[in-house]
Structure formats: C-alpha cells, structure tokens
Length: 280
Image (cartoon, rainbow, N blue to C red; front, side, top):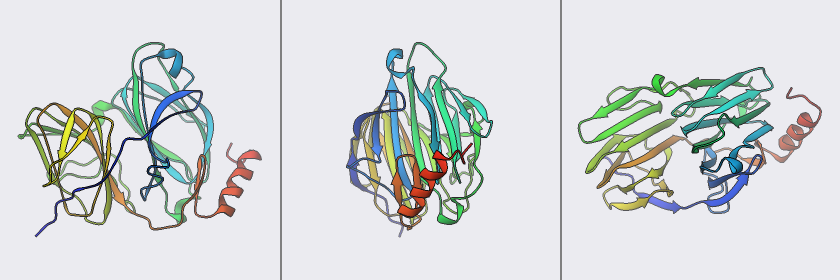
C-alpha cells in the first residue's frame, strides 16, 4: 500500500534583504532551515514599492549550483559574463546552471507595480560543479499546463505528471519536480512522486490542507514533507502553491555566500578565482 506524505516541518522564513537592498523572505538558507538536500536556498520577493526593489540584484558571482528564477508578477532582465541576456516576464522561468562560475545580474524592468517571484538554488552533484554554465528560459505561454476535473490546474515547469504532462526542465541525476498548482474552491490534488525525493510545498496565496492528517498551511508558509509515494492536497478556497521535489545528493555541502561547493578548500579556490577574474 502506498504511503501518503505528511507535513514534517513548517517554516515561515525570515525577513532580510539581498542584492541592492531588495526586500525578501528567506525560506531555505536561514537558521530555521539551513539546507534541504539538494535545495540550498529559497528566497521569496514580494514588493510593490519601486524605491525598495529598483536596485535589484546587480552583478554578482555564482558557482556550484543551479539557480531557478520564477517570476510571478513583474519582469526582470538577466545578463551574465558569458554574454547571455534575457527578459523574464511574469509567469516565466529561468533555470541557470552556474557550473564552474558565472557573474550575473537580475534587474527589474519596471518602475512601478508589484514585483514578485521565487529564487531557488539547487545543488549540483560534485562531478558537475566544474561544468560549463548554461541556462534555459521559458515564458509563461510556453510552459505546459494541465487542467484537471477536480478544480485543479498544474503548471509543469519540471518533472512529469501521471497524466504525462512534462516540464521543459529535465535532469537525469536530480529528477526535479517543480509544479505551480492552483486549486479553486473545494479543489483537490493527488499525485505520485518518487518516495526517495526530498519534497516541500510553499503556499503563495490562500490556504491548503496536506495529507491524510489535513495539516493546514497558510500563505507564506513552507512545509517540508516526510517520505511517501503520494501527495494529497485539498482547499476550501482559491489557493496557489508550488510543489518542489528532487533526489537528494547526500554529499558534503560547504556554502560561502554565492559559492556552493563540497569543501572549504573548494570554496576558497572559488573566491580566489572570482577575485582573479576567472569567471569573466
């Protein structure tokens, strides 16, 4: 008999700033939830005051992980040291592998209105940390979605649903799942995911009940799920959330700011390389 996943831990995150004063809530990567293998960081930015967000995230280095930016409202422009540039519109997703090192920036392309999105860092396996940086971008209209009869819509960024809807991101090692799930009044969601995957839910808006125990989660809360093969969600109101899961790496992790490596020596080398201009 398949086991239903239940809520293991609930995290509300901490308010902080990053970049040039960008206000955000850090859900993963703080003292409350330092790491959730293979997830290293999850930041949520949600601001309608242009004077606070206009500075964005100026040029900064990265190495050793994948950076996933999901724009919910507003738009940002990405530029990097490899010559790539792109506009991430509302509903769009950029999935960037920083590999052996890259310098990038993400700047708001608006001077008013709401800027809201999620920034997720996914650790790279040790043998892929020196790979060439690359990125994939999909705007909202190009990301597949699945409408179900039980008041449920799933936008599939990564992974594949039981109905066969597949996201544009694939990774044979981590087998990531990244689904934007919207439930209407009295909506329900049931899906199989690999038992060995680390999985969590972040509620964007509304309120959700999780598992057979019907554990309640409110907007702004993150729930780490325990092991199991089935995820069950239900809602009595309009609710939006992301379900994110991936295979754990079970490797040592040493992080220093924007560098995510396997040892202190590797981190020191990354810092030295950046200071010497190797990332450019």
